[in-house]
Length: 110
Length: 137
Image (tube, rainbow over the protein chains, first blue to last red):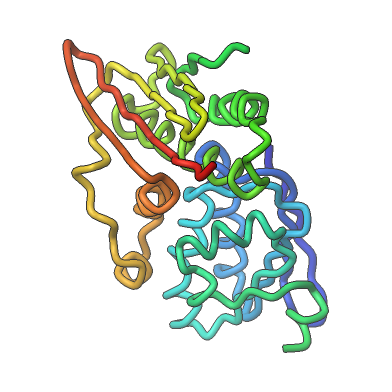
């Protein structure tokens, strides 16, 4: 079960992920990011404080946009990962190619 | 304890698979990180089978059996679809995946990095994938 809530704060478009991302619902995450890019967003934040689980389907969505973010100068940041979920990012080495912050304050101020 | 589950080949069954694994992976020597990673590796194999071997056909099914030993856990995944031998797939380069804007390919990396051994065999139309994790006593 995945719910995504969107809000705008200090010029950032924030997507709040609640629940679990897997192959059955990663398309919702994909569409949410696609919509922000199409709308011309230049700063996207992913709030993962309520993200309990993410499989490669969800991680693949982030991966597939990294080039677009670079090309379009979109500032893309992830914050609030639990230790368990962050470990999964680390297994893949994603922490080295994505901007990941411990919390919202750090993500907004860095 | 019931240590096996049959799921139908739809991605919506993956939540059911995780529910089963959360109930099954209760061994005291497993950390919370271990449990999540084992669940993830098993789900990645099953998701690959559902999507690539069975084209999400809800009439097909996959069977998972969890075998516990003092020093290891074996996850035995059986299906009767197109044989998907994970051992045939090399770990893709992360920078290449990024450059190609691909959404797929990460699942195989996760399975190979999380599990200690992977076995695959296909006989009489039944494919068996065994994911093995060893634990130090």
